[in-house]
Length: 190
Image 1 (cartoon, rainbow, N blue to C red):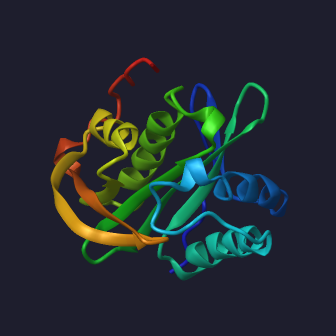
Image 2 (tube, rainbow, N blue to C red):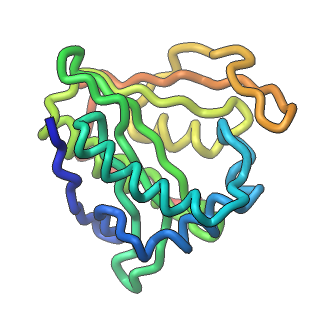
């Protein structure tokens, strides 16, 4: 089953399918060691990786396993980052949420706004019952994003990642349909 990658709008953001022209912006974001310090992979070192990422976004939608959308600021079209729902399972009615934002876009509430928008689409369109997310236990900002939109911390995956010799734990979060509050007002950006 193919999933149509949505184009969504919030007050400040446009969520849209990735385009080839996004590859340079993706590379700049994913090659930044500070941005990638809590990820399960090291920073990108080759530009071709960004083109493969864009292609994988299309393949994921074609295969019906998820969607990943680019985020751009509505006011000026600036690239903000991306948000995704992956591992969509229509039988279990579940998926996993993820996001990555450029360093200059942190602290403005964009991740919360984008995740809330994609979740609203997903609960309505994909009829999800559960969405899961993970955050490195050192990434307090990502944990706050998840908690603001209603996710509940359910446990810890101990030593689940080893990147460049650094071992880290991840928190597992879950959001159940009956607990979803799409109209919740986002907390002000810090």
